Structures are given as structure tokens and as C-alpha cells.
Length: 288
Ligand code: SAM
Image 1 (tube, rainbow, N blue to C red):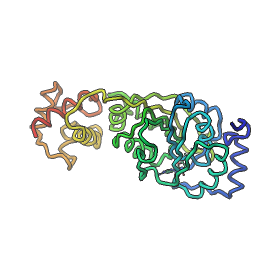
Image 2: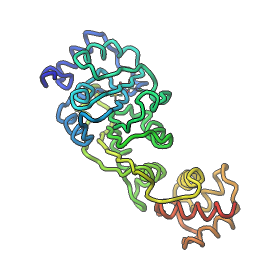
Image 3: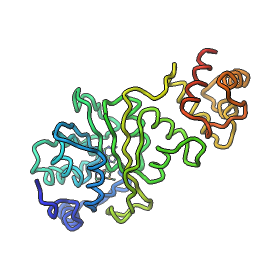
Image 4: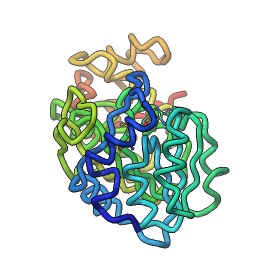
């Protein structure tokens, strides 16, 4: 255990470490390091890490959160893209023998091969430029994760947990809620990071479902329909699908499928629940 005052969550320790290594922040990697121990405690509480857990941390930076994860988890895999951070991590995580540092792009890592068979917990202060590809990649590739507890842009967290008919509701809400139950655990202001991001942040916990809350015959078709219907906001679902380019249903087929599930031909995707998208997708599958 490292004393709290000597951990990187103490801003002075972070500044000393960055100076020692002449580390230059890279905007292209979305580098905003946490410098607030209260926020890290909140993330740890939400993530509910125990010694039985294997944790995957995406983008450890200089190891600020990793120090806490290493003390609470059985094993930690920390995947960092920036090679300049590897010598820093080797020093800041030297007191722990349960951390594996991996210098790779998380989008290219074979996660099951890295972490083994056991279910994992994923924890990260995500680089905001690739939040959606990372989250969707984890779910669509059926990574064996029990829960994903991540810091994201506040607006993105709100979109993930939005309900039908609200302004934040969209393809991301539906995709996330098909795989997991979202819960915003904390809002985090810009002054908790160095350098300060231009936006507010939030910690969201996505607890993975053992099986999706709705059943659908063709998952891929349902997500193509969802994307098509939100590509053109304020358009009807029928027009969204007709203009999508990647779906070849006629107007009549789409209207018949909507009618079969009790929806109006003028319905907009923004008002449709996951259950309604699944039922509508199944009707179209039957017509293929
Ligand atoms: N976890 C640290 C913290 O909270 O202080 C750093 C968080 S910072 C917002 C995001 C981190 O992700 C950076 O260290 C960045 O270099 C890393 N990163 C960016 N893109 C990545 C990728 N594709 N794969 C792995 N790490 C990435």
C-alpha cells in the first residue's frame, strides 16, 4: 500500500512525476489525468472491486487510478497506447506485483486472450475521442465483462442512460441498454483533471446483462434499423430507412411491419423503445 499523500492522486505528486519524465501531454490521445482522490474513491465505490476480481484498465496514463485498482483487485491489466508513458508506469506501479502493463491500442487488443477465461471488470477514465468505439467494441465483441465503470463526457453519459422521447435518446442509448443497465454514479467538474478538459465529465457504471432484456431474431438488422432511424433526426422512421442506403426495404414493407406491431407509419425513432425496435425488426425479418 502506498500512503494516500504519496499517491498520484495528490496533484503535487502528479506534477513532480510529469516533470521528472519531461512528459508532454498528447491531445490526440485524449490525455486528461485525474488529480482528485475523492473522484477516484467514487469510481472505486461504483466499480465494487474485490481481491477476487480481474480488472482491465483502459488508458492508465501515469497510473493514478491503477494504484488504487492494484490495492483492491486480485489482478490488473493496464492497456496504454502511449509508449512515452510506459517507463512512468513501470516506476509508479513498481510497488505492486499484480499489475501487467500492456503498450497497445485497446481497439486492437484481443481481450479474452490477454485476460483469460474469467469474467472481468473494466474500469477507465476513457479518452473522450474514442469513447463510443471502445464501449461498443466491448459489447459487440461480447467481451466477458461483468461491469464497465468509466469516466466519460457528461453529455455522453446522459445519452447512454436516456429514455425514449427525451432529447438525449438515440442509437447509443439503445445500443448500451441492449447490453447493460446504466447508472450515473457521479458528475465530475473539469478542475479534477490536468490539463482541464473543455467539458464536464461523469462516471457511469454499465452492468452487463446475462442475456439481453429483449429477444430479437436478427440483432445486426435491428442495429442497422436503429442507426438508420437516428441518422436523420426529426424524420419519420419510414423515411430514415428509405434514405439510409444500406437497407433495401420498400416503403410498403416498412409500413406493414410497423402496423403489425401496432405503430403508426409516421412514428419517429426517437419515441420507440428497445422492445418496439426488436418487434419491428422481427416483422421485417419475416418479410425477407
Ligand atoms: N487513467 C488516467 C487517469 O485517470 O489519470 C489517464 C486517463 S486519460 C483521460 C486517457 C488515457 O488513455 C491516456 O493515458 C491515453 O494515452 C490513453 N489512450 C488513448 N487512446 C488509447 C487507446 N486507443 N488505447 C489505449 N489507451 C489509450
